[in-house]
Image (cartoon, each protein chain N blue to C red):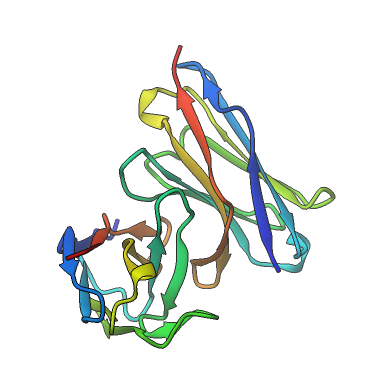
Length: 108
Length: 118
């Protein structure tokens, strides 16, 4: 099973600033990586798939990069609605698909 | 617009079987894609449980495989989860979702909390 590790566990950033979230895979997942945003009491929402392709309706301030074992989600100019928990998920080698433990993005 | 809605008991006794159904609207399951179940214990991360194709082909998480059965009813446009011999560790919010090949999730249900307690 591929283990996904996200860092940091919590990230404090001021509105308007840039946030950089990291996700590392225990072995190569090529570009088969997705990012999700989850707000309290809500289901996860797909942000990015294929490591860098934004899902339908996702603002351009969200961008993904990386391949192999190292991935980054960048949110430029944070808006108030962006403060949430973010998960990465690999789907290169499944079953099982596996998720990272999440990064909580909080207001500084 | 594709919509998914989970339903089932919110309380299950230890050692019994958890049963949930996911009703899909806005898309015919028979048209394709895999459909899956994911759970999230309170305050914790996401765990994939398993997935099913409209033909009935299934994939399960090896960690749960011995206790999980996922089935599909295309006539009702829904799919179901059964998890047997539950314990308190199975207490979680259970989500159903659609899988886009290779296997990421684009549409999710709102989730349903299932508590395992006597």
